[in-house]
Amino acid sequence: MKRLGRNQDGYRGPAIEPDALIRFMAAEAVRHGWSLEALEAAPDVALPVLQRPARPLHQRPLRCYISAGIHGDEPAGPLAVLDLLRSGLLPSHVDFTLCPVLNPRGLRSNDRHNTEGIDLNRDYNHLRAPETRAHVEWLSSQAPFDLTLLLHEDWEAAGFYLYELHPEHAQGLAHHVVDAVARVCPIETSATIDGRDAHAPGIIRPSIDPSSRPDWPEAFWLLQNRTGRNLTLEAPSDFPLATRVGALAEAVQAALASCPVL
Ligand SMILES: [Zn+2]
Image 1: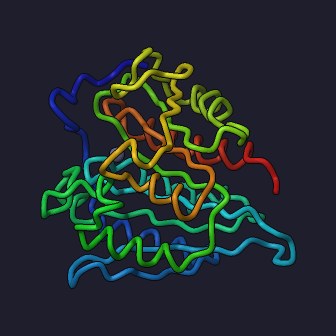
Image 2: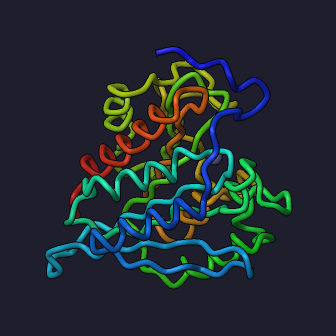
């Protein structure tokens, strides 16, 4: 499978219309027994949240959080969430929280930033953007998650890769995820990915010291406040949209299948 060669100085592929996407998600949520709410970030900015408790209820379920669409020029993440909802493949024994459209204004304009020019995924300690403030305020009311999966795309990448962030003692999931995704999408094999040394093909394990980055991404806030285990999943956006959506959906399922039972 070859790159399309379309992304020259940024993402140049198809965009999505977030309002239509949210309507589709809401329909699937109702059909599959999910609850749906909207976080009002601003008068014209609502962030959908979908939740489904685990069945059976009496066991201590794995709590999984999935987010997408924080960068408006990365449409595959929200579409992967829609595909997972439609397919019914998300396991019923897991307690799910989904925030699948964190930057609706950016998605509408196919722009990484929100309309105020803020990169929301660098705003989780400053909280300058209304989207980030609404998201953090709501997350702060939620119980901790065992596994958090953040769906992204990289316009420069030659293949799928991921960031694995967790304390030293935790068993890694990254190899399982990369092996699964390799069946549907090329894997990034560069020794240096996004300016960081790769731990293994397609796997980056950066420092999780919060002082190592002044502008926190969502993953850092989650690690400081709500989770011990995070994977940031990056699909290569110079490949066909269906390939990228398939890669992210496969990665989510592989992470869930390999996450240790509590
Ligand atoms: Zn991104």
